[in-house]
Length: 509
Image 1 (tube, rainbow, N blue to C red):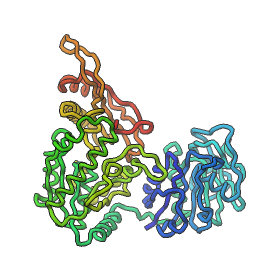
Image 2 (image 1 turned 30 degrees about the vertical axis):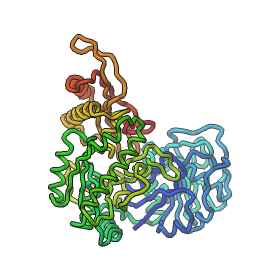
Image 3 (image 1 turned 45 degrees about the horizontal axis):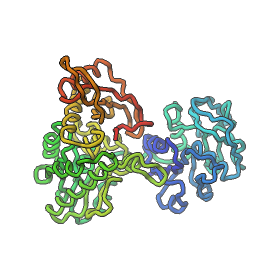
Image 4 (image 1 turned 120 degrees about the horizontal axis):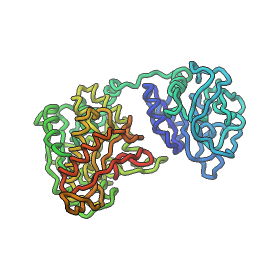
């Protein structure tokens, strides 16, 4: 299988680079920039991409790479800081920028090269840099420039070393995907063999090798991630898998009943267990206000429940989770800051009786949906909006109480119902309600009311790593707001969140 390693220098678009490569049907992984050449070869990389980053090559603590990386014979594409570091390491000249170049630019292609094959002589691109390459290293040639940047792209064709100052991975470089495809196929000679069917075959084999003659329990949440993970492991293990759905009291309206029907149809009564543990979770959350504490408590309690159920099943050594690549990235990596601890990554206890099986750990959400379709899972489950593992606990800001849960549960049901009624459900990544920890004055029934506020959150996205607020028609928002204040006791105000990710996250906690 073709593989590209994306060396992460802390750039805001690193994850997007990996996604764009996968969209070309080539498997990609994000690795720390200090990876050694020996490990690169052992991983079977066919090409390398050096990401952008916030540093200057002149910073005392600037991230560096082993110079041997450029002598391995692998094609390398440096993007922004990755290009500057390549030039600096190989003897070129990098100058501190007098002014930052940020935004759209037009690159003029000044020499024929496979990187720009089929793009003509002018390429609209997105710049975001301070430093820039002033003189290329020996053996390199300039193949594109802009009005403000004398070296917008450079190449050493003999060694297949490329650098671009702009960002081909972002949508603001309209033909950036073609540039990446040229690097992957025309220059690197890779094969587009990353398909969900091939992923399923490899995953089933890996699961069997990991579990061997053991038994496993799968943590079902009602969402597409856990269902696809369970279906994948069921294909590998058959009746040696038992699916467990934990009702932690933090579910959406009617969710337990829907989950029971769906999973019983898919896996049969003998392979599914439903555990009522609402009292345990709500008891642990009493008085807790910090969102990280909520996630940690819920993650730990989940594990303890599954360990108890595994002992009842008998002979179980493995726990199947629907962990995704964004969960791992957002929970913090060696080069990426922690955005929030996902309950199934940063929220796990240090000591566990069960070994984790995470067959989706390398996938983005849209890839998981495609796996679900390839496995023949129901459309209504495959396309269900994401729901956080901690459930409504992170949609009740501040302390979680039964009364507050009931308010957000009813409001959330109204939001989803009206989104479906308007025919918007499949167009949105997520749509839900959040209960804010503030009360405001209102007038209801000619009397003074002092009630809570509900925030409606709806976003569009491809993978959840970035998102934009959804432009829901005002008349739909009006119906939602009217229904919420009339049908949810204790709520007298509704607001709409128009924040994108970044700077905000999709969930409020």
